Image 1: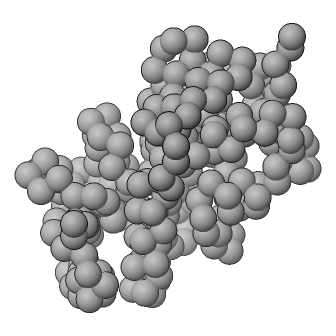
Image 2 (image 1 turned 45 degrees about the horizontal axis):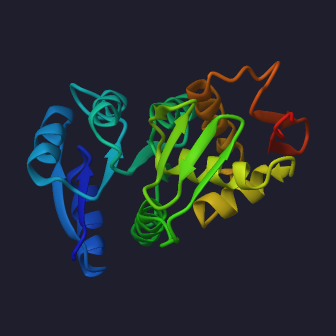
Length: 229
């Protein structure tokens, strides 16, 4: 089935260019030029992924991302200017899956869309449930819970948690976590793993100073703590 991409940007030329490259790559593309329009198009078209500019007139991209995350787990790739590091981190905290810094190559957008879609679909696995310290992960259904209560995780958060829970006690560097949970790593993106771990800890009610689940190994990365028997 052909996948549908929603491209949201107030710069007409960017929309035209990104649309042309995505359509050439075999995607169906729908577009919007401002926030409220983007939400209306999203609800009508049900896209498989959203490419979302942060600098939109009226309702900005962060507000759009917040509304989308409240109602859907659709993958979101943010478009952002290089100077807006704070906005990029906020976007990731709101649940965006990836970001692309302007100016960018349209080929990079296509490559990143494909990567995020593959990640969101997941690799087919046999029905299996893994658990540790009260955290339960259903790999077939891609569902997570803690002490019987569902956890609302983004695709990246779920992939990270699966990797960590499957290897309790093993230390992963930030680069290893990105490579194995995301499938591709782009220069300068390594530290964004900290934002995803922060989000995971919040959803697990985990204290970074006295962790029960995810432990920071200073200067190296992270590990999932072994269960105390």
